[in-house]
Length: 213
Image 1 (cartoon, rainbow, N blue to C red):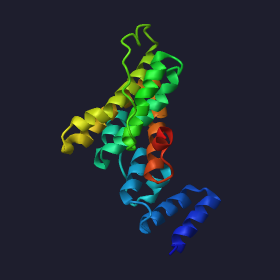
Image 2 (cartoon, one colour):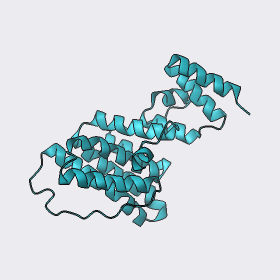
Image 3 (cartoon, one colour):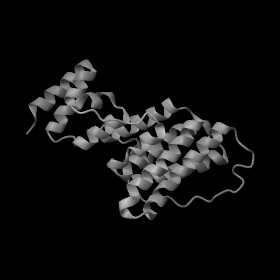
Image 4 (tube, rainbow, N blue to C red):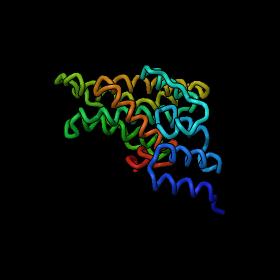
C-alpha cells in the first residue's frame, strides 16, 4: 500500500528543489520506515544540508577534520571506511593514472572498495620498492600515501578485537583524510566525504559499489 504523505512530500520536493521540501521528504521517509533515523543522522553529521534541517535535534560535529572523522565511530566500521575511500579517491587527481604510482594507488583503492561492499577480493598487488624513487612532488606523494593507507584499512580493522573495530576504523580513516587534505585542501576532502557518505546513507546511490562493479 502506498503512503500518500510520503508520495506527496517527494513530489513537492522534486517540483520545487527547495531545501525545506527535501527536509520534509526526509522526515516523511523516516516516519514511513523508508529511511532509518540513524542513516539520517549520519547524513546530517557529515554535512548534508537537508538532513540537518530535517532533524529536530542538531547533530554536532568537530571543526577539526581529523576529529570530524573520529566522530563517525558511533555509526560503526563501514562509514569510516567509506570516508577513507572517498578522501583518497578525491586526492588521486594528483597522481597520474598512467604511472606506476597511479596504477598501484588505484589498485589499492579498488581492493578496499570491493571489500567494503562485500565483493570477492582482487588478486594481491605486488609492491614495487622503486615506486617512489623519483621523489614525487609533495601533493602527489601525499595522495599516493592516502590511497595506500586507505588500502590497508580493511586488513587492519579485521585484525582488531570486535569491540574495537569501529575505533580502529575511524583512527585509520582519520590518517587517510589528513594525507588527502595535504594533497588537496580541507574543503575539498570534506565535500568528497559528505557527498559519498550522504548519498549512501540516504539511499540516493552507492558510489563505492558503482566503482567496484
